[in-house]
Image (cartoon, rainbow, N blue to C red; front, side, top):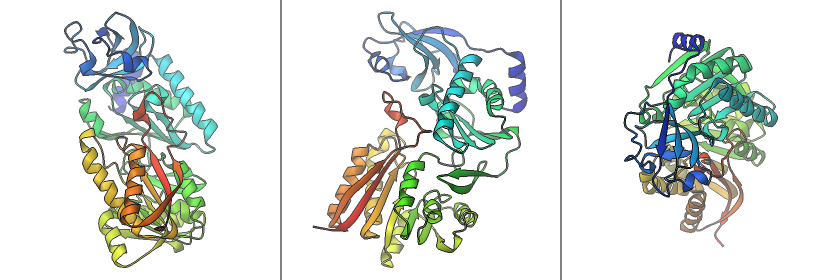
Length: 414
């Protein structure tokens, strides 16, 4: 959505939101009453209240089969998740006041938790703004919208973001896979001011440069921040391998905080150029090197060379994007962790991370356990990590909890 359209929308102050009422099938309200925020299309009693014809991005009141109100929802009749909660009260809209209050509440939490203005300012449902992600890089914002409801209110959101923090620039990274599911176009666009190709950020006291416009997702991954801090603490004086490194979030943090040697591996040459730039930025480039290639091939190569590391970090992209990918994805995690564990010096640390929401934490534990048994290693779990405070978890919405990180000491088999 272009900046001119944003200005026109803001000046007009109008909205195309229409009020609808949807009735659920008997019993379909249980998950919503327990605290979940999403409504699925097969839960709607379409014989009473058809979804067909409802405009994507409009707002509807939802009620159970007995007519009891469940709340106000953003609706997209063309998506499996056809409703996303706005409020437990009926008759609520995504008004300017509501959006402003939730943006301010989310900002206050992050300002309380982080010393520097570098964090995920908005994390969708957890901040009452389903389908909206805002990452902050000091005075630059990266915004990602994944639902029709939020897309309809994007001009107003952009205006509020500007008023709340006065950024120099805002980029819309609206090229995520979920947009196609919602029937939305894919685009990347500078919506406000100027956005440089490289932006500066500070994480765990370490400086980084990240490419917002050409980079992955919103440009940076803040979600593993606490796990990177723990990895760095336990890597002082150690030899470290960071696989799927991207820009070196894990590896450079370890190097900057005292690791003796860090090797970062990624399939992308441009990402590895970013690794070395970030190493120079922190004055540790003499202890950082890179290997370009497919992660599984690189691990095989290092094993053939009989290389060993005190700390091996594997933080792959989501191997399980959908439920139907679970079996194949778990096999990939199994292979990855077996290869990585072979490279760990006895007494060393395997840090196995995952961003796959569909990979349960216990299954990752099982994968580490079975890898250790197959390789005749003794694996001891020292710590488990989750996502940072800028990715808060809604207990009733398990989909908001996706980050897992296991810190496992590996020794000879007993």
